[in-house]
Length: 369
Image (cartoon, rainbow, N blue to C red):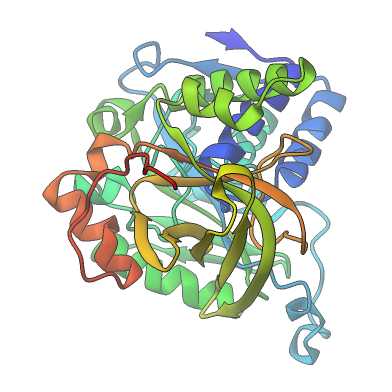
């Protein structure tokens, strides 16, 4: 069991944002939530999966949506009340009431700047802990892209809440695929911004179906990135070394285009090479996260491998769609969690999901002339 300081959480969320591969929410939003927790003097506690009591109840809180700042200005939302408290708090208390239980703590739904913070925030406000594990090991676009789904764990009951003081309870749902469809529909009718909590169950029923130690991994990555930036080292190379990956491209942002489609941030990013990558280009295909990378138009990397973009001037990860033309970036490829490289894992979150008619091939460095 570890009590985390704000500085610890800054490093941890930095690592989570790297593992977020462009998605998982904004680190600034996550830090704002946690600063509120520390301002209140509440402890932020991380426990290993093995430390958690088998009969303790845990749940998975997360935010769902796309970045569309204009959506909340739509006339249909103007007559609705605006919640003062975060929607995730309403969802959490309602789920406890529904189940007549008190949660021991939370698990993150994924690695990301805000979604990971949401798990810590929710736990801290309710006197709980966060388990050092998650069902993704990275950020992912959909609820089905999780080891919960791969292990057939039931998502329901699910509680969702939005910023309009509306709370929804789904008592039963066939599987995570249907849960994704329902929550995405609610999200689209909630200005592309909804808070959800699912997979409420005992630790003993969930421990076989999550990836252990992911938060510790993110913490180490964050420390590595921060120290590299402070000491003037190459941040991208340092992250790649710590994460057992490699730098696949360096260059300047030439073009980017994003749109919101069916509740997802969808787009593409084109990078013009510099240094040894001069006269080459790298293109990323995005659906919330960076899903596919092309080198000079040729398929280079696909999910479930992690495609992470770092601003080489600030040393910070870039989240979609926050690019600017001429921005200097490096693309880092990190290996996929092994759970997603199985035949079932790839059937859910492999090249086919990104519209690629090709078998998954673990990414490897290419020779650049």
